[in-house]
Length: 341
Ligand code: NDP
Image (cartoon, rainbow, N blue to C red):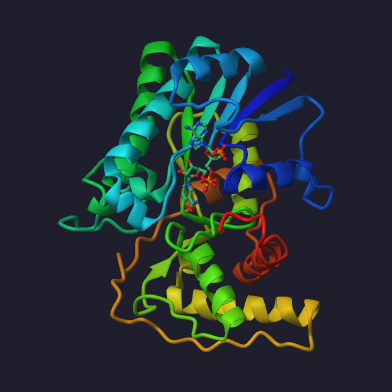
């Protein structure tokens, strides 16, 4: 049966990665668009998904059989902390409109994108780590972004309710921290990797010190946006259950923020060596250790993903972290004037 796939949030970090994986002749053929698939990438300009009528019209226009739902109000720590209500309300509205329009339009499959922020905060919970798909609702999320987290958790509740009442197989994917080309590199409102890249870039350019915040000790799992995009394509073609799947590198690939900082600088040095060898990328790092660290670690298990990938017979390998950083830095330097900074 041919598929018409609507991707919401098609202009964002993950949406752009999907477009690359599906259409770029250099990408792995196993994940490229198939002749029986028609893909549409929607942005907020085409339909504000907070509005039920605009959402309904979007579904009427494309008549999708499948949906990858990426659109969300997304932000860094500080914006989340000061706007929990906005993150809660906007994301509840977006998700409810997308799921109800999908149901009304008889869409076969919806994969909504959650985040590891949905998981409970460690406080008061024993044996929380590693995070697994069964642990989403066992305690309140971290207070810093409880609005965003609760809105995302509700998608899992809705998916189960659509299954119970209407037999729908609407599901969700839970990625860890994502980075890659087309990220948001804004200095105040970005996630950790794009924020560090922009800071390092400006410090070198202006001859000032590069000041990462915190002790550098916390550990995180990062997934390259183009790997995540492949996993969405794989889920679309191979996964037919309501239960969510964590999309992450293995726990053993947690890296410290200090390692990330060193690797970001190395990626800039490699970029400069290939673009302007006469002017090596040289920057002095001075940690602002007084700044808060956030959670020390929140490792997620990718066991379910690894088992499902094996069972499906699809060959998939994560891009080495350094290579992914290098590709992102190359993109950032080349597209600095048009990137979200
Ligand atoms: P981006 O901020 O890069 O992109 C967000 C996308 O959502 C854009 O295409 C934007 O459209 C669209 N959007 C936002 N508000 C609306 C709206 N009201 N109506 C219609 N479209 C809207 O996000 P990412 O690509 O990083 O995130 C994709 C998904 O992955 C999200 O669901 C996010 O929660 C999740 N995620 C992200 C992580 C990360 O580290 N980045 C980590 C884990 C999960 P436009 O460009 O037109 O504004």
